[in-house]
Length: 134
Image (tube, rainbow, N blue to C red; front, side, top):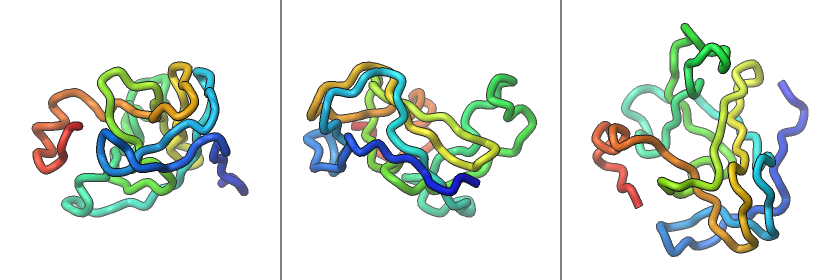
């Protein structure tokens, strides 16, 4: 377990023109930097289904998660505030050993631009019909 989790001081939550609140860049952010590391709690099936994430994400040999049972988890930090974009400028990975989600930029992001992640394919939206794709 890490003694201190990282949150980039150059991001903040603001009202979003896309949906509710969103996470925004306070300065220009280059690609491939960490935005935040967030812990989570495991939730039972049927609880908070609009905001749960699968942990671990992936399942490829490179992720070191093959054969691991996925759990439904509710992450802390800004994780549930990042809005969706098909052409996202950020993403996340799982740190299995430390049981964390790590959010990071995948493109250069301009000052005051909303930071958005890709929630998943259209199959996600049919599996969770109560969630609105914005």
